[in-house]
Image (cartoon, rainbow over all chains, first blue to last red; front, side):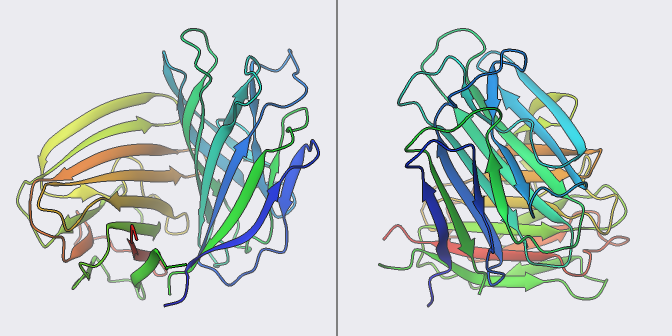
Length: 180
Length: 172
């Protein structure tokens, strides 16, 4: 039987970079899976908040139709919130705390079912970052449910940093899954 | 390299009268199973659920973490007669916005009770929820079939185009 879980493309950073785009995604798979291990950005905007986020967009930053519902825990409390009508899924996909040191990578796994189909598109994201901190608001584990209210096929997937560049060694992998 | 992630079977809903479908004769040659559902279920708040081996007794239980978009909760339910694949609280309400559910069923051929991890991704553009759950089936039997169904079927149906795929995962 043919292999049905296939690496489409990957990017392991050799220079600090603020975004990674997987373009011209083949339309031959059933679902997509995006996995990323991301280090701390090199710039932190104190007016934003302590957390740097990875934003995910499709089809070169669509202008509308993006919404999401998420929940997260920071080691002491949980919350749930949502966003609507944005260009990208930007809240609740946390990568790293500003207090993170070197050698700490955050993990993201995103599942995009039926990305080439004719219906509205979904994305399900798990993200986590842990830094061995016993107190304070510095770690996160989260689950994100996103919707792209458009019937157009997804042809590119992009991850964007919040303000700075991700460090060398951050890695990004896009897989395709076939159901036959 | 050996193929370790294989589709066993896919069911795609056609028409507008489907309320249940079954993956039967599941090979016992894998280590774990993954069931992936993507689809809409109609115009009401409904539960899409699964049962193993057509067991309709109260042999299932569930612990869940739930985010509504404004609040969170964790709860549990014992002695269920099904495992929800998507949830009844806010799923539905649209025939065009799909919901997404995954159940990872571990060691489905073992002689122990069967545990599974579930994810529900159900944003509905202004409403919706996201969930993580663990479930258990109190049976030592090998899972040989999985039925996917709407718990309040009779008036509501899977939307045409809804799909479910059962994958087998081999440890070697």
